[in-house]
Length: 168
Image 1 (cartoon, rainbow, N blue to C red):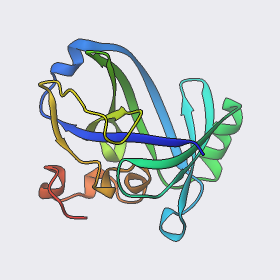
Image 2: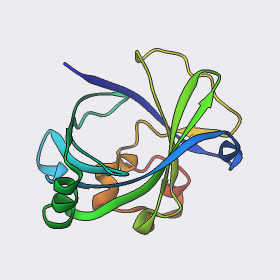
Image 3: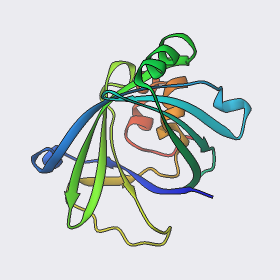
């Protein structure tokens, strides 16, 4: 069974921008209400590539994940006609730090101001070498899941939530 092992962090400053390898716009939406099931079903447009993604809704750093390419025209159509809640719009930046590739998501629209770094790992206990710009880990806070941001965007969060404090 395919599993994604990923840790998520806030950033403490903008120094990561000096190390960006490449960037790409993402637009994604959800076909199912995550509150009523055990998985989210997402449609994503990465530049001119479409994807359908099913991810289990487990807390922690490890989840089941299935991802399939679909035609970009179909992804656009689903985003415009079938997705629930506001769409997630972000720019993903890839940053290599000592052989670890961090995916930094800079959110736009209703989630503007939120910037998180994700690091995919081979195993849950794998050590992470933290760059100086990496802030507190928020892997355990469900409000940082993209599916949650589609239901309750960053613009609706309290100051404490935006600071990464536990409120979930």
